[in-house]
Image 1 (cartoon, rainbow, N blue to C red):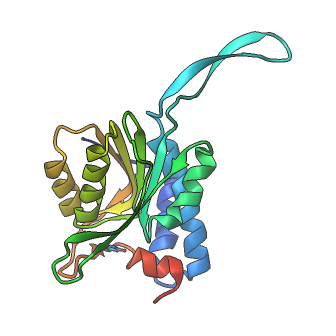
Image 2 (image 1 turned 180 degrees about the horizontal axis):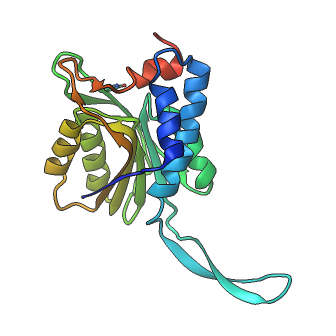
Length: 210
Ligand code: URA
């Protein structure tokens, strides 16, 4: 497993505004989308391309295009949905599938409540979107599910992670072709499973349910 923390002053700046409890939902949503576009740039470094011949107004040349099968973007509902627009802006030809995962607030264990993915994921490059890598339970379950369905390499893009969650994902997915791209790694998880200092409940802040 490869972990890449996108270290860029624009990302840190936008993250700071995102973390601020005073930032209202409409601004929070725009910032998540902007941050996602920046993280998607880092997260798609390994996207598969194939050569293509074209002719410019001046001369023939060879470039690249996104290879088939097209990448699959999988936002984890509900908070991952806030990251989707930023991602499809950079990868407009990708397919989008959905996984609904929620954690039981007492056991903190993930459960799947919705799934809408292509039948066959053989040889698919998948990009999982989940803003908060907290305990790592739902992200691990989502990635394992994609591998079971035939995906060959998976990149997870998260805005924030807790060290405990990263370690848990690493242990569970050891030896798998997984890359995790992050905006920042925070200090720790608190006893309620929130990332500290974090930004609170990403889904609530995105969709105004606070
Ligand atoms: N999910 C969130 O939205 N926030 C956290 O801090 C942890 C999990």
